[in-house]
Image (cartoon, rainbow, N blue to C red; front, side):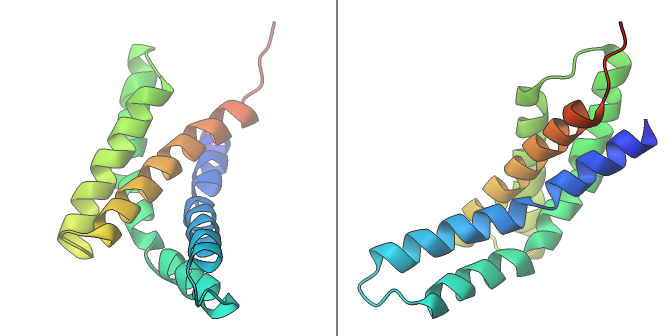
Length: 128
């Protein structure tokens, strides 16, 4: 079980990269002065806020996952909700209290929670 959890946490580390690439492409393609510098600025900004997603996974998502496994009620919606809540709380106390950075950090943490569960389900083997 520990290796499955480590693989899930490893998948959740992709969250800042995915968010940074999506935002970077969006702003690079939609802004009039959109250049590669805009893309890399958004990508590095998302990566520099990766600690928010890590804290949300460690403090909120992982304990709730272990609790839900004990009860047998693990769902994507529960972990996405705890990821979003954890990202909002962590972002509020550590990074941004409002604005787009707050929303982006919260969504990045929710995506990290979803990737965490995806990594767990992908790495677990079903034995018949």
